Image (tube, rainbow, N blue to C red; front, side, top):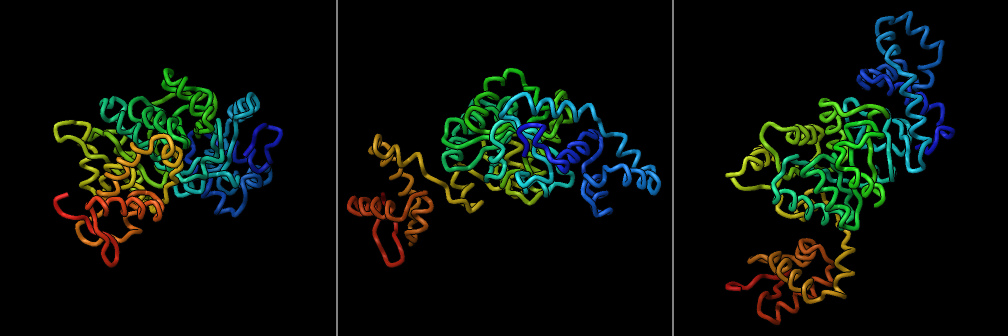
Amino acid sequence: MHHNSASISAQSMAWIRLASAYSVATKKWLTLLSELNCNPEALLTSTSKASLLKSAPKTATLLFDKISEQSVKKALMWLDAETERHIITFGCCEYPEMLKTLDSPPLVLFVIGNPLLLQQPQVAMVGSRRASHQGKSIAEDMATELADAGITVTSGMALGIDAAAHKGALKGIGKTVAVMGTGPDTIYPYKHRPLHADIINAEGAVITEFFPGVPAKAWHFPRRNRLIAAISLGTLVVEAKIKSGTLITANLAADLGRDVFAIPGSVYHSYSEGCHWLIQQGAKLVTNVNDIFDELAIEPLRTRNIVNVENEKSEVNSLATDKLLASVDYDVTAIDVIAQRGSMPVQQAMALLLEYELCGLVTAVPGGYIKLRGK
């Protein structure tokens, strides 16, 4: 990870050079490096370049000719212009391991903001650019709850669901990562300048594999989506039409062995079709964030509730009450299951259950609690 061009190691410099070969699939470089069993620095020395040009002239020229010193120069100038800019290369320890599962992982990431965030557990949220009002508010609420539970919310800063996801995460106490389909010096869409600034100010991160000076092009967005799918533990689809980029992202996530979550909607609404199709294909139907935590086996941090308990005891209690009560089944439910479903410590769950017991809502039995009928 480098804050300015003076601190860049020769090794990282070599990765940046390889990455600047804009039209070369990174898989080709990685294959070449493993066949020759050498690092990028050694690969770029004049002797190995010369011998490669002799032994495999076609491959070598195809690859080496694509390296753009102009792009490399732009990258270093971009890096030096401001302190919150970083370049993470494939060889760095800060490089997110999750991305290495990709067939053609990015060799370089341009990061504005907090680069350490890329190592944190992330959940991607994706959906339609022309989302419904309801879809946007679902995305925003879910993102806030994920962020409050200490999960980084990752999306593509597009209009619609993406923007709602970033905004929701910013409302929470957590963080958000935006993956861009343009160079790090371009904000796309332009109207998201304030959102871009908010993400960085909140110690989030804006990342891209595209070099400075690279504009928005249609085919960049599917490329961007593969990063969103790969860097996240799971991808939550909020709204999607049947033939959409959102479904491509969800399929990528599934192909990478990541969880896919989908929010159901009305059968009359075309934006629900994609989600319903995903659910038919085996995506997990999600109606609240606990469904996501259960699947990913993540222990949510409950920081916000603790603060609120003091100020809004009654409101939190009635909410917790309904939620906790709903988590007790008519057959025996173990206390730790109830606590987990209510996302609270066992002690707190037991105290609440005692109150319900006094109200005649539940009863303690060997092995846990059962809900009393008619309540």
